[in-house]
Image (cartoon, rainbow, N blue to C red; front, side):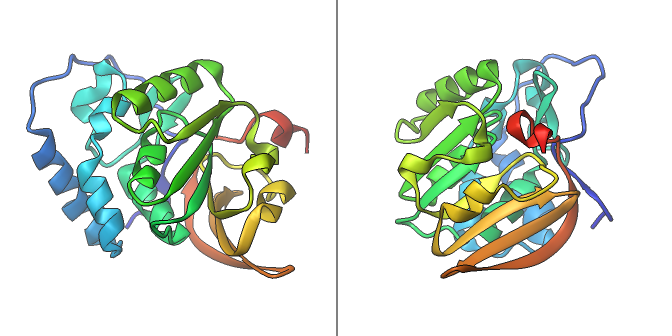
Length: 229
């Protein structure tokens, strides 16, 4: 594994070739086998979701032929869809159960929300960039994920009226853990968040919060209120 797994910070600025016909199911299978399972992701439900959700539907047509490659891709507005491995890794760390209520902060393309929708009972997702929020909502509906609740706004304060959550995933990096997200966890709930280039898992134990540090990662910075801290 590379020392630093490039996730949402890498922008591919080259001239994009038009998408070519491809056996996307075969590409997904190879992605799961070679990029995800080979790096140690073992949760069978996560692997099944990664095999099922068509990642190419969540990227612009100009980079669709690269959808199953081992790196992030640009989705517009200086944002990216994360490397497939990191999507699977964060999902596995969240330990999402079938009846879980899950919050995602940073909808982006909608791909991570779709993966979560394959695993959870309820999915809420917030995106601060209006154009991305609209496009992601449209894509999720078109792909049959009408029950994913989307919102345009700043995710620093979470989604309090829908709390508490069994799991919260954050797909942009603040300099500190947003207190509201931590507080919106259920007892036993898990917050998976990149902070200062480290992937953290914060587990609520009553009034205590346990923090585990996982691999180094690189994400785009969290914007909005996070930038004022």
